[in-house]
Length: 180
Image (cartoon, rainbow, N blue to C red; front, top):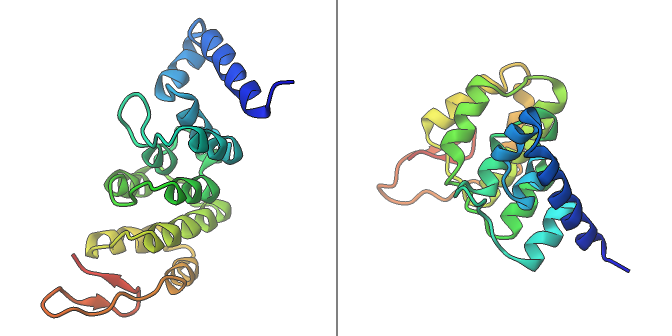
């Protein structure tokens, strides 16, 4: 009997083959050109975990990091703190895709309750993984969470405040973020 992982691999190959013959789906698959990036873009975190255990590749074939795929999604329904947590646990660097994610938050991210809660969780995960926020990043987050600023405050409270180092810049006391 085949494992679930093998069945998912076969499903991906079948769907990928079909999508290449269908314009719209082919376009989507051209943006998610590996099973791992498809798992990220569709919120399949258990499959992603199994795939990363088998091969620890954190970049898609196009060179785009899987974390960038998670933070700048093709479909906003699948933004997932579980996916981001999985990628960070497997060693994804939280700083590489941050500028693109910041632009996504400014221009394309939805502001409904679910999205705000999920993004608050994601911001906390990224900060715990070592992301430092400069004043511009804090301003973007404050603007994004302006409808529900308490969500951002709660997320940032869950992250330890970095210690002050001599001549290393100010620490945002309210936000717990180091200025860069």
